[in-house]
Image (cartoon, rainbow, N blue to C red; front, side, top):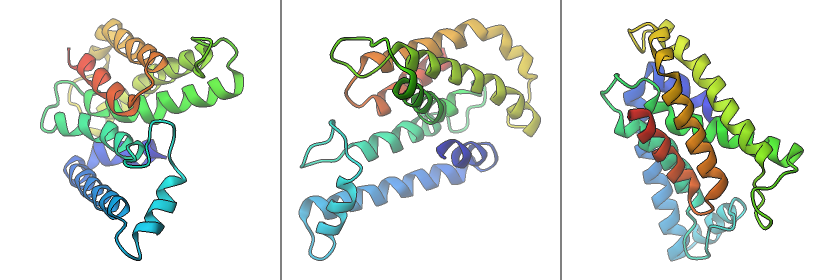
Length: 197
């Protein structure tokens, strides 16, 4: 769902998406303040609602899952504002979280057999699906960006840099397999950085 919402917005209205992410961050902060301070009549309701969407990385004091997903998608876009020489860089969060992480989770959960570690839940099949899906999305996204005028250079020039793209996608996909804390905020930044090299 994030891909369907954010990709068209990033292509056609990037400044509005910048503003929207900032507004969403402000709303998240306000709701978290209401929840932590237990502000009368809303604190308990907000706590109940947000508690339903927590995972093992969240504590009773601070719920960070919502922030890490939002910032994972927003920070690459904010860092690339005004720069068009790296056309995939603003999409780093959307690609790594909206496509890669989602496919890795779905395939790993349904078909995953080979675990990366004995105690972990992440599987080799899930990681392979995440890496493959992000690469496929990049090769679909580049001609789309050229066709919409988001980039003015022919997308096939970017195919000359396919090796660096494969390295960036594979490295970020493998990092997902080995990180447990705040990977939703960290992996898009690593992927963004590697796309900017």
